Length: 151
Image (cartoon, rainbow, N blue to C red; front, top):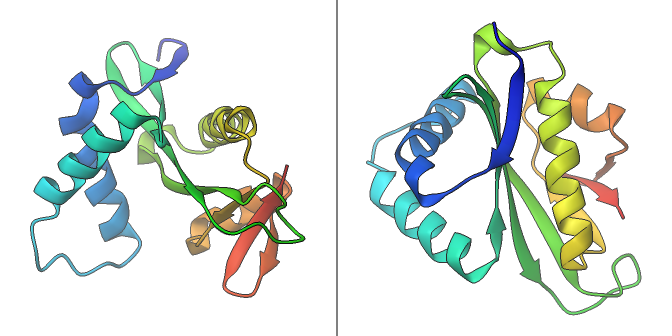
C-alpha cells in the first residue's frame, strides 16, 4: 500500500463516489428497491456547485478508499447553535481493506474543519453502529436519535 493522500471531491469523482455511497447504505442495512444513482448525482452536482456540500476523499494511488460528506443547512438559531448553521455529516465510508488505519478519523477531521469554516455551530449525524465508536471518540455526544459535535 502506498501512502494514503486526501483531497476534495470533484465532479469527475462522482460516479465512484455514488457507488461507494450505495455500498455504504447497503452495509448499513438499507433496502435498495430503487435506483438512487440519478437522485444522488443530481444532489451532489447541485450542492457541490453551490457550496452546500463538501466531501473529502482518501486515495491510495488513484483508487478512492474512503469518503466523507458534509451538507450545510440553516435552521432558525437556537441556544445550542446561535448561528443556525448546521453541518449534516454523511457518506462516511472506508473500503473494508483499509479500515482501522485512521482514514475515517482523518476524513472526519477534514469535514469538521469545513463546517467550522462555513460558520456551523453544530454537526449532526445519524450514526451507524459501526460509526458510533469513531464519533464518540471524536467528541460527538448523543442527542436523542442524533449525535452532535459542538464547534
